[in-house]
Length: 216
Image (cartoon, rainbow, N blue to C red; front, side, top):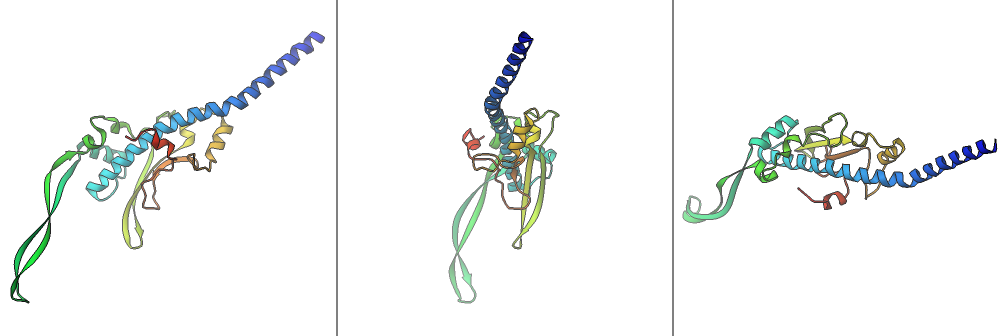
């Protein structure tokens, strides 16, 4: 019986030791996995934002779906213009004399492909809608709209994904804690997103640390 009790005690000690070890290392490993995955997800969201801003520049609104956005990046062009001031003399019927008229002239210098300007020969824009590390090949949820801001009709868009999709294989207790984050150093809330359907903004909800990892 003594031998049996000793073995049982050793098993209990081993289990308790493992639980203590996991309670210390678990959050550390979770944070490492989280930051690695979030960085890649945010990188894609930045590509989506850059593509949407280019789409708005050319079309006056944001794309409502990824098919339209990718097609635009693939074949769209920026117009390169140059503004210059000029003047000329024109007869004024009121005063009966020639008067100086000042005008601003816009010259078209050429065109540049959107994909070359934004992605420098990289075709990653074709897969920017796919959520990195997602288990079921999920894509970002994206919507666009026109909202009224003090009488001004403003185009807006939002692209987002739930943290649960990115961290599907992580401990539930740590994931629940992550979804409840409220900190200037963390991605707050249960989603990672860029843009807004309620405000005129193309900002993301991630902290500056993810921008310091390198802008594309």
